[in-house]
Image (cartoon, rainbow, N blue to C red; front, side, top):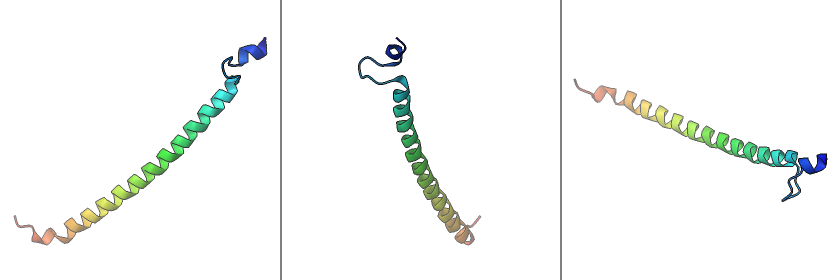
Length: 64
């Protein structure tokens, strides 16, 4: 009876197998999102540095 309670009747998978599959997909997704956020963060940082350098270079041209 314990085996029947721990099995999914439709697919024959145990609850632990389901949890393992879910954790596998969530872990892969988190790694992919982490890499994406690192790339976006680095790109935005470089853009901010370049625009700041342009502002500092052209500050002499501003008349008040």
